[in-house]
Length: 437
Image (cartoon, rainbow, N blue to C red; front, side, top):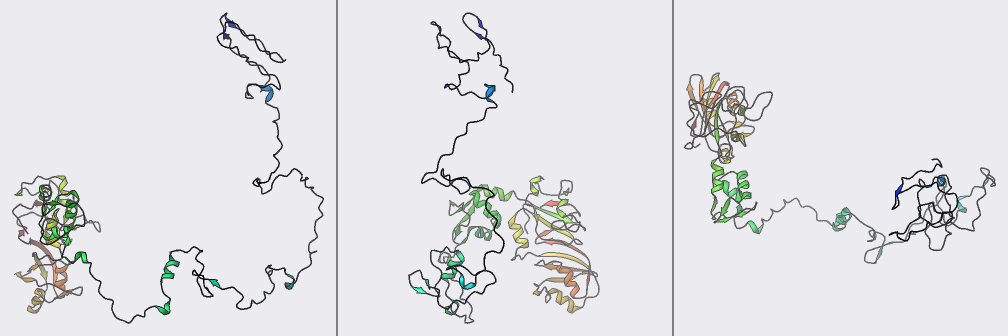
C-alpha cells in the first residue's frame, strides 16, 4: 500500500462540477454552509489527530496501515473472578519469575524413607511390604433401611442397572424352591377365548370364501361384513354362529383370479429355477395357449401376478400341473387336510410280486411316516396306475424302489375331477367356470 492519494470523481453542484483539490497536511476546517443549501454540508476530509470522527478502515487512511495497535493492560484480578486460561489468575503485585537462577538438584540427594516413616494416609511405595490389616477394622455397610450389616448390599444412592434390580428381586439360591421333577402345569386359557370365538380370517377360510392371505387383504380394505356390519380391523374375532360374507367388491376381486392348467414337458421344474433348469411358468405365454381352449378368458399380463404352482412334478415327470391365483384352490390341492385324488401312469422296470403290490397299496413308510392308503393296479404289462391322496417328494419313485421296481417314466393325467385330456405338451389352458377339482 502506498501513500498516494486517491482521486475521487467530481461531485455535481448547483453551480457546476466541483473539482477536488489535494488534501492539506494541517487540520481540516469545516467548510462554510451555503445559506440556501437544503442539507447541511458535511466535511468529507480526514479528521485531525486526536479528534472524534468517523472510524474509517485502513484502506481509507494508508498512513494507518503500518501503525502499531494500541495495547491495553490486563484487568487486575478481583475477588469472585473465574480463573483465566491455564489455571492461573492475574495479580498486579506478583513479580516476574526469574529464569536460570535456580540451581539444579543433584540426583539421589533425598534420603530414602522406611515404610514406618510414612505419613498418615500415605500408601506404601512399590516394593515395600504392606502391613496386614486387622480383620474387622472396616466399618459395616449401611442398609437402605438404616441398619448396619457387613453383608448388606451397596447403598441405595449408587446407581444400578436392570441386572441389579432383577438380582434384588430374585431370592437367594438357598431360599429358592427346589424342582421336584414334576411337569409344569398346563397354561390356563385366556377367558376372552372361552366363548369359542376364532379369528375372522380363519373363519373365512373355513367357509371357503378365500385364503387366509386374501382374507387379511379384504378385511383391511373393508370388504368383509359380519352380521351386516363392516369389519376392517385385522385380528377381529367372530363366533361360529355369526354370518360372514364378502361384499360385491370382494366377490368381484375373487372371481377375477384365474387358474391355469399346463402340460409340463421334461426338463422344467415346477417351482423356482434350480440347477440351471427353467421353471415351468415360462411356458405360460400368449403363443403357448392351446388353440382349442374352451374358456372365454382373455389373456392378460396381470394373470402372472401372484400365480403360483399348486403342487409339483419332478423334472423328469410330465403331465398336468396347476398354477392358480386363487387361494381356495391352492389350499384344496396342497393343504394339510387335502383329500383330492391325483392319478399317475407310471412305466416301470423289474418284477413285482403280489406281496409287493399289496405293500404299494398300503403298508409302506417314508421318512418315518406311514403313507396313506393308495390305489395301485396294473394298467398294462409295463405300466402301473397310481391314485394318491398325498404328495411327498418323489413319493412314487421311492415307493417303487422299496418293492424292487425302477421308474422309467411318470405322467400325471388327473387331479380331482379335472383331466389332462388332449392338452399338448408345453401348452396351457384356463380352468373353465364349470370345472371343479
